[in-house]
Structure formats: C-alpha cells, structure tokens
Length: 167
Image (tube, rainbow, N blue to C red; front, side, top):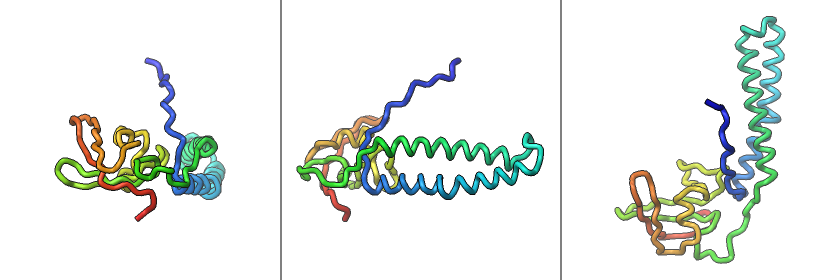
C-alpha cells in the first residue's frame, strides 16, 4: 500500500481582516516567541549527552519540525490570501463576510457568518464559504429558501436576516 495521497483541493483565497490578523498573530507567536524557546530547550537538552534516549531533545526536535511546517504554511498562505474588507455593492444578497440568520422548519433560528476556510469556527458561528451550507446560501436574498443536503437527509432553511456589519 502506497503512502501517496493526492493533494487536497485548495480552499478559497478570501479572508476577513480579522482572520488575517489572527493568522499573522499566530505566525508571530510561533516564529518570534515559541520557536526561540523550544530551540533553547533543545540546545540545553543536547548538552546532556546521549540524545537517543533524551526525551526533552527528541520531543523538542519534533516540536521544532511542527513549528517550522506551520510557519512555512502560514507564510505561503498569507501571500496568496485576498483580504475582503468592504461590503459588496448589493447588500440585499448573501456574499462573503455576511452575517446570515436562518430559520429551520421548527422555527429555530441560527446565525452564521460566512468566512474563508482558514478562519472557520463552528462554535463561534463562523462558516467556511467552501462548506455545503455556505455554498447553498451564497447569492440568495432575504426570505429565500435554502436547501442543504446532509448525511441525515435534506434540510430546509429560510433566510430571515442578512447584514454585513457586526451587531
């Protein structure tokens, strides 16, 4: 069995200003704060002699590889991202960056913000624009019905509010 995995489909390149700031803060944290600390710990552990059984050295080197990989990814990703910092001309429809309030068949409401794939957080109500639910909402207007296919079957929602500025 081969270890080859085909490359993943690249996510959309749009990001909100808040998302870009969070990625830049993560990059700064990793490169300027965490990496020097781990490097110093690995240096101290290397002084202790036999590195083959030195847990601090082994795990420190592993953490350095993880940090370096994430830093490389963040640098490349930040170069290709497009920051969307203004509302669209037609604010009556759902586009990137919109806060959308949906009502399901039971009358329960839920609110989502459509963001880029690098900043989605379902617990915070941020939905990736590449997700099936967000794709179903994009381009829709107020009072439109949105049908989302899920593993449990189709679900129907109605768009009850669209806004582009935080409440």
